[in-house]
Amino acid sequence: MANKRDVYITEVALRDGSHAIAHQYTVEQVVKVTKGLNDAGVPYIEVSHGDGLAGSSLQYGLSRTNEMELIEAAVSVADKAKIAVLLLPGIGTVKELKEAAKLGAKMARIATHVTEADVAPQHIAAAKELGMETVGFLMMSHMAPVEKLVEQAKLMESYGADTVYVVDSAGALLPYQVRERIRALKQSLKVNIGFHGHNNLSLAVANSLVAIEEGATRIDGSVRCLGAGAGNTQTEVLVAVLDKLGISTGIDMYQMMDLAEEVVAPILQKPQEITRESLVLGYAGVYSSFALHAKRAAEKFGVDARDILVELGKRKTVGGQEDLIYDVAAEMAKIKMPQKV
Image (cartoon, rainbow, N blue to C red; front, side, top):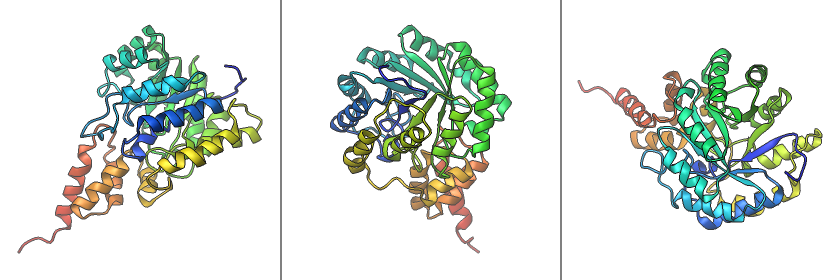
C-alpha cells in the first residue's frame, strides 16, 4: 500500500449494507460508492449479497442485480483498493468463489458460525489456490466461551487463513468481552486478528477501539453506518477517532465524510439508527439480519417483533434458521388468541 497503515479497514457497506436496502443495489450505485472509497484510500471493499455469495434467494432476500455484475463493476473502478467477497459455506460454493476471483476479487472472507469452523477448510484452501488473501470470519462470536473461540480460530489458522475475525454479528458484545476475546486470539495465533462490529447497543466504535488496543489490525467499517440491524462501525467516524488517537488508516477523512453525505446517504431507504428492533437484537444476541424478517413476521401474525427476537435469542437461533422466525411468530399468535369455550 502507498500509505503506511497501522490498521487496515475493510469497508462492508456494499455487502452488509445490502441488508439495510433489501439487497437492491444497482450497478451505478456500486460503481459510485466503490470509486469514492477507492479514491479515499480504503484498502479493502467487500461486495456480495448481504448473506454472501449466492445469497440471493427467497429465504435470504432476492438481489435486484446479480452480485457477479456488482463485483465486476466494483473491480472496474478500484485501481488501488482490493475487492473482497464474503462466502458462507452451505450458501455459497467454491464455484461462486472461482467466478468472483475470475472477475478480479482479491480477498475471500469465509464465514461460519463461531462453533462451526470445521465446515470451512475446502473453501479457504480454494481461495488460497486462487491467490486470494483469505479471512476466517467467526460469526456470532458472543455465543461461544473464549476457550471455544480460540479453538475455532486455531482451526481457521490451520486451514490457511491469513486473518481471523471476531465477528459481533448481533452487536451483543460489551467492551470487556471484546477485550478478552481479541487478547486471547492475539496470544494464541500467529496470523492477523480482525474485528467486525454492529451498533445495536451503540458500542461498535468503542468495541473496535478496544479490539485495536488489544492488537487487532483488521477492522470492518461501513460508511454512513450502512448495515444490518443498527448498522456497523461507522467508517468515517472510526477514521476520525483513530486520526485523533494518532493511529493511521491511510484513509482521507474528508473524502469519506463527503462520500457518506453526498453518495451513500441518498441510497438509504431510512436513516440508519438504533430502533426498538435493532436494540433488542443486541440485547437478545440474535443475528442482525433477523430484524427485517422479525418485523414482517410480527405484522403478519399480529405479535410484537421484540418478543420474537428475545425468544429467538433464548433458543440460540443462528443465521440460516430464518424460517424459525415465522414459526416463533405463529406460536406466539396462537398463545395470544383467546381459546374457544
